[in-house]
Amino acid sequence: MLDSLFSYRFLDYIFTHSFFGLCAWDLPALIVLAAMITVFAVHRHNMKKREKDFEKELADRLENEPVSAADADKAPGLRVVQ
Image (cartoon, rainbow, N blue to C red; front, side, top):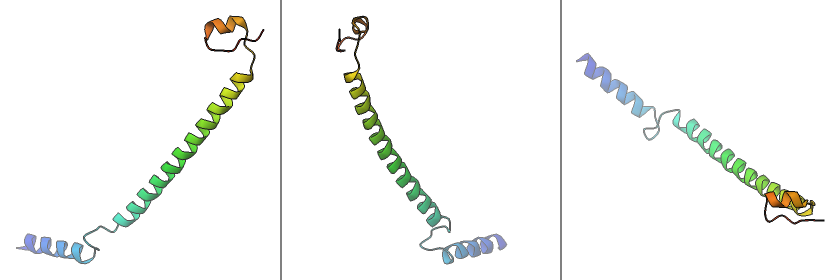
């Protein structure tokens, strides 16, 4: 009898003191999850932007850098300056 009474009171307490059956930690956890998703999205956007800038800068440096004939044999497609 006490086990069923305890279970009923416990379940009654949980549903009475929770909002739509959610735990008290659900809302803070959702806020932290939203913040983590936002930080991840911003970080990924910034990293892609930095990668594009780096590739553009590298292409500009390689385009302006003179290449010897010995180096051209190792990497076909490089512009040879004599």
